[in-house]
Amino acid sequence: MSHRFQGRCRYCDESFTVSQGDGVFFHLLHCDRCGEAKPIGFEELGELHLRYLESLPNGHCLLDAHRDAYVRVHIAVEPVSTADYRAGVHALAGECGCGGRFRFDAPPRCPVCRSTRITLAQGSGNQSM
Image (cartoon, rainbow, N blue to C red; front, side, top):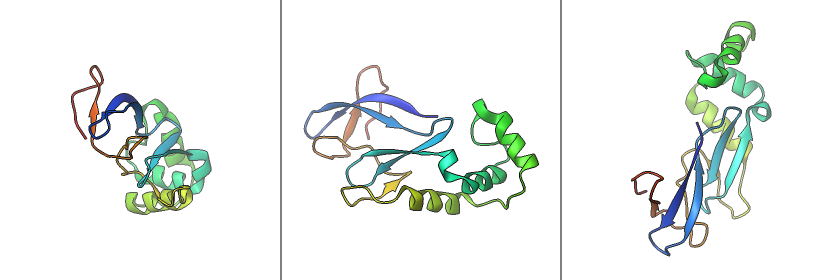
C-alpha cells in the first residue's frame, strides 16, 4: 500500500513529503533521475494488469481481493511474470521530462537538490535512506 512520510535531505536540509508504494487502483512510480512521481492506473494497464493478477495466488491487494479473485476465475488471460509485468509498466510510464525513466525501484529524492540521502522526519519512522 502507498504511504507518505516527511523527509529531510541530509545534503541541503530541505524538508518535504515523500509518497511511495502502490495504491488500491494504481502503481506509484518515480523518475530515476529527478524523483518526480507518476501514478499509473490499473485501468490504463488494461490486459497487462489482468495477466499479472492471473499470476498472483493471493491477488494484488487485500482491500480489493474480491475483484482480484473474480479476474483469476472468470477472465481468460495468460499469466505474466513479475519481471515482464514491471517491464511493461516501465514502458507505458515512459520518459520523464528531465530525461530519466519512471521506475518502481527509483529511490526518493530531495525536490531541491535531487539527493537520495534522506532521513525520515520525527514521527515518520526512524529510517535513513
